[in-house]
Amino acid sequence: MYNRDWEGTKRLLDEDVRGGKPLGRIIGGGTAHVAATYGIDRVPVVKGQGLPAWEPRTLKGMGITYSSSPQGADHTAGMVTARGATPDTLVKQSRQEQLTMMAVDSVGVCQFTNALPGDMAAFISERFGEPLSEDELLTLSRDAIETEREFNRRAGFDREDDRLPQWLRDEPLPMPDGPSVFDIEDALIDEVWG
Image (cartoon, rainbow, N blue to C red; front, side, top):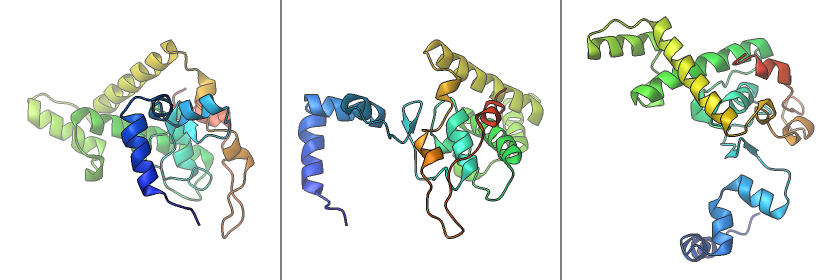
């Protein structure tokens, strides 16, 4: 078992991170920064964003979202938790979920409302007294995502950054039905946004 030193952790956060000490500045820079500082290459990040709780070796749709989302490994960008779906289907689901979540985020609605694009369009139409179709809303979502992707390009990100860490492809995760790796082809991930 792990030796949990809560007092030491609290002291590290209070003294080093809040105090702006060198170690605290390294830690405050996030997982990717800590790894780069110490020469660690097995790091669970995409575009510098740490992977959240969803394991992409078993929930491959989440791996597609983590890879293709402009903000990197963000599960709130588009939840795709289907098991057993084909890679093509997972790509389509990830794209659709990311478009939907962009609409939800843009309006300021919590994702836990499970709002559908048609409902969101109706909500916006009612609020502003102007018609907005589901297709128009999803076009606006796509435009917003493309703006974020363009920002990333200008910041130096490219297709190679739309990838999960290689170790998730190489290191099998033991599962009851056999070991699992993230095995979605890069070319399919590239199809999310074309």
